[in-house]
Length: 625
Image (tube, rainbow, N blue to C red; front, side):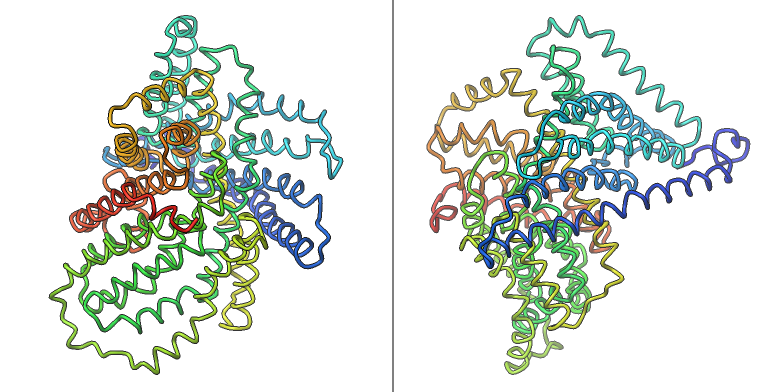
């Protein structure tokens, strides 16, 4: 990305010695952040698991466990966001930037870093003020100052700013870095100068900031969390009299909801089942059961994704656990790799409602809908979509040649089932623990982690202790990237609510002709688009609190509406050309994205039909509540 590396441009890039020094500083500072982040993941697992044991086994609840977990969680979220920024793993849309020529693409990469740095710079002082204000609050159980917890915000902001500077100096030439900083500064100055006039524009400011600024930043490749933050900061600072520490408070509120602690724990659980071989034995059993029928391994892929989605909370973890185990054998049987990656992406969308889905957990946290009800209601809609996908698979594989494939003997299938039984039982153990009241939706992930560790050590004897530390760091990074989006999206949602947008949206949606059916149809269309642009979690945080009350007024059950919303967003998330989930599937399957474009169209149409069926038949979502 250093455009000035050619002859005659040596002055435009830092000397190699300087780049080496920057790399050493980055590595040293990165180590100082990654180690505490990994330990915080481990500490949260221990604290929550101890709470379950103390309450359910010893009948002596730990009154301080949730409070300590909340304190550690905010530090985990911020340090995880720092690790993700250092690695360049914050969620962003790069389709437009990737289409540019090399010089312009390199400049836009530098602009994305500079824009994020601008947001962090603007947020620095308000974050410090917010932490100082929290120092006056004493926590009820631990009886310590609230500053111990709130200090995570200014510390995290400062560290992200430091890594942004290092990243800008390392990946861009001096000319590109200067151009990017100047460009961002000019745009900020223009908005600042236009501040007095913006006051008079009223509701038009919503379009300027939450559509123009946020949308422009997302399309420019700026990470979604920073795009949301810049739009919200600009709107509140330039058009309202809101004290700026309020923005930090809303971010804290969004990131600190204890139920979101399930995010890092389920991500870690997903990595554990891959490392311990639990996913591999599940796939081996399903392949032995169905591998001899036409399209059998494709049915296995659909079923395996359903099962693994019941364990992991991350779609990327789901696909990473299944694809390496199935794709080699499927290719050996002559399957087209474009069709394979298309089906993998389609199953990612299909299983979005399978608990414990992070999107379902997010819906519960921002709308107040029962997590247990969402987990129960999410099982059957995914089955409906899976059956629709099976119809497409059956049609496409009707001429498959299986003359060289031998049917696995039933004795071998039985043996594979016996080996896979502990792995197959895990999703049911997790769901039974939640429904039975043994653990909350947050705590139950620790039971799954303990179960997986024991299975890996004593059942499958596959537990690589050397991989544990990198897994903890990866968990912190992915969780931090997700939680920072939730934080800035929560601040944006608060800004939209304060502007009166929610009331206007409620009036508009409530006035739609056709009542409930029209509302559901518009919701399917709207969330499909939102899912392709924003992804599920930020879209839910932004629009869930606004649209769920409207659905309730029209007589739509909360759980039914949640299923329609999640399936629609999944459809957009895995639909090219914008859906980032599709590109994640291509990366995991090591397939060129161009090869899956045509095959995925049929699968997406099938998913759309299934989503319409779920929307039209509420019983599918609420029949077992």
